[in-house]
Length: 240
Image (cartoon, rainbow, N blue to C red):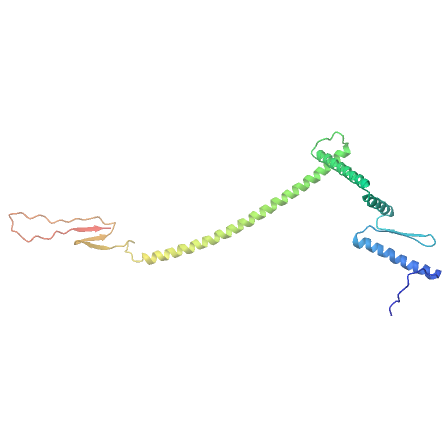
């Protein structure tokens, strides 16, 4: 059975009023703590009982919460007044100028300038900061170099693999070329050369580059001798 609706009004019975106060106070403080943890909020709760007893909770400290509240409340009120608003932005600009000046001074000290006003402790702290910065820069540089070396190794492996594939393709083409040469120049003599015979105007020409050219001519007949049928002139040409 569900709990009935409670009328929000002052409880007349003192005992019931004290019991309700204790229960709801604990529930309120629990919810405030959960809100600060879950939502990363700065929470401050103050409760005074009817007898004047204080119960409070603050996520950081009650003093800082109250100071922040008063400052925010004052700024909010000043935003409604034009004169107060101008003063507010003037204070903000002055604070930003001071921060900028401090940063510029730190930068010059990091560069080794304007060190005359620093003590031994300040110089030691500055040296430690520079060493930490230098260590971080070196680590970043080494990481970049390692990444580049790994990338070059990867590209080198890829190029080597491509060269191996190209070498295999060249060997296949070479074998195919040798097979084609065997088919085209398959008929050869013992010396490995082709012989072709050509007949031009009754002359026999043998294609052989290693055999010299021989010319044979018949001797002429004397006029006084018996005329005999002339023998045909025999020319033998052998070429290679």
